[in-house]
Image 1 (spheres, one colour):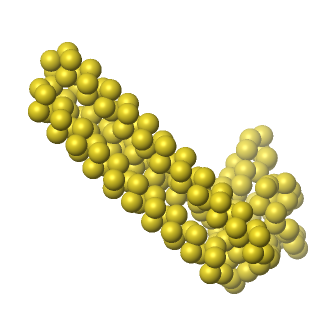
Image 2 (cartoon, one colour):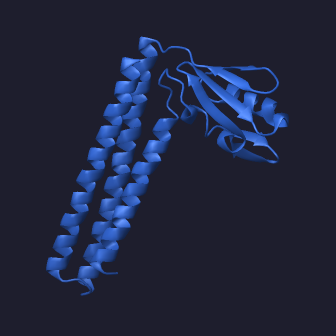
Image 3 (cartoon, one colour):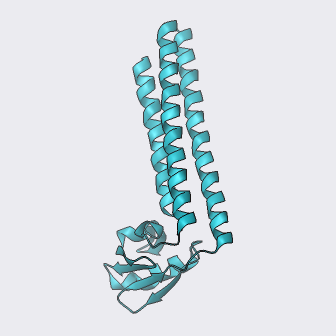
Length: 186
């Protein structure tokens, strides 16, 4: 592989890791109703586990309320059961056609636990990105040893990969700051 190919592959993997963190953070309860809170809860219906977002329209008409309107009313009980059994700690109210999920306010203690959970998630993401860098650097060293890359090319590639690390860690820190701010100010 050329140094450009290694750099592009590394950048793609790091960006994917950052996107995964964004998706995980969507499901963290902040005390404010957002469709992202329940959209990836998996429902056992039609013989498989399906995310709610594929089975229903999800909206948040009020800051403390999520409304779920299933496309097929026959799955309403399955969706209700899946939300109740999820680790989100939410209760549902069903009227036969739609499901209402009330979002209770968070206590100070619960907010602290959620912030700790978010910090752990972001640290795991940083570790993942560092592992990607380690693997890329090993690959560069191997290509240099095999005389595919010159010493200068290898050095430049490693510097570029280090730059990717700084960019992605800055993105992770920004996500941490935003989500922590959401939780502590609500």
